[in-house]
Image (cartoon, rainbow, N blue to C red; front, side, top):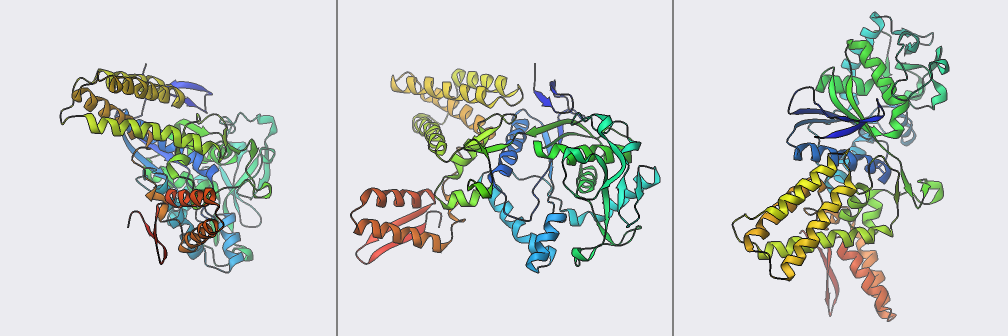
Length: 470
């Protein structure tokens, strides 16, 4: 049947047919760099990585664009609060984001356009909307999109046209569905914007959030491309507005397939700092949780189901990963230099593909993987697997891992994220536990350091340490 994907636009699974045979143009909404990304963000980014990897597994040539939102209401607000320039404020969070992508073994996009680098394409797009009668300038200098001029507004999120209030305006970048009204394309400069401003035909100001993605995606991928991804929280107003302004500018369809990842919950509740259940990737890694286990948990619940994240479940993730690693190691030891007799591996590849072809059915895909592990271990235990078969099965496992991105991760990925003060604090806590004869806690602290990629060397003069990848 081939690859089928659930299209939010049609609310059904559809056969995936790229615009250009064999090529896929993919746009994924990236971070707003006003803070370190949290695990809810990474739930979406890991889903998008799984999609990207699986498209490559199926033989497609991919062009992937992920934007960086470095100018919007939040980045300006927080940089002003810190008394820091917008560029200096966002650069640190950009760097942190790229480090976190590496930690989770997420394949880099081909392009990471930053909004501040695409101001002129945004101005050009807004001018075209003005010329065509889809936009107008308000009394205070802001430029708004006129949703009353676009009858198809609301088809992504199934908004009732009767709820729309053309002529009423909202300038905030983010708002609830109750705010279905004309939205800002360009925001006139206000004192609270500080030095953040650009010249435009409508006076000095800055772009609205929604026009940013339309300008960046169409500049890099063309007016009409294959897949646009994001979290369900991006559907309204962001993606709905993207469709409206893009199609009204170009007169062409914007995107063929829209895909959205569901929310992440923590222990069954919405993640919130006030509830004390808010996690960043860096915090989890610093606390001793392995990046491969975090990736596994974020990936192995189907992207259209809510993911209930629990730190306790990370232990189950490690068990699953170590089962795969153990099987991989046995195959490495047993195989010869020749790959052949690959029926067992070929069957696993076929079953994995059949499952994943159904809208990235990761549960079915993993069932095929662990059936391969079970049967492979049985053959190895009974001496029924030849060296050549082991080579074929190992090759199949490695092909599947090109999608999962797990077996090529290592705990060393975490080491660079842990500062020396944290390491010394853990070593001191272990020392105190040993002096108190609490060896269970001492062993647990040593294991936590090992999970962070830190190797301890106990000497008569005290404990020394080094990063395992140094």
